[in-house]
Length: 123
View (cartoon, rainbow, N blue to C red):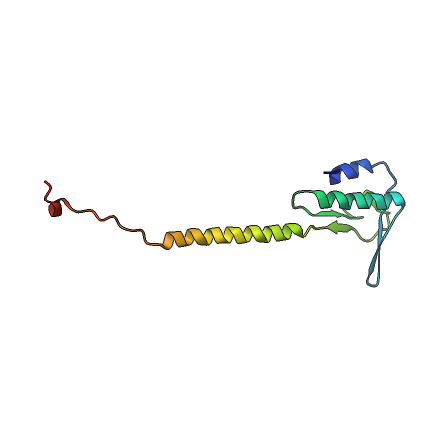
């Protein structure tokens, strides 16, 4: 596995990174220097390789503001939908296990037949 998102951010902290996101009609433009675009590609690569569910967001008004010009309007965020599918699969398994446990409780247990002392003639 490559660098984590935090490692990528730390490696670019002293470099001149200024990502500007513009929206023109139906199109989104990611503007920046070669260094900025490499930063963005490394962030995206690190995010895609992480093995846990988490979203990533940076914005000119919130976390990551250092990487945007002062007049930037838009931030950027990532969400890995593979984890949505994994979550759905886990919920299905949990529901099936719960249903199985519920059905097991509903089944009447076979009662043990014991003869009373009187019926067997025991004293």
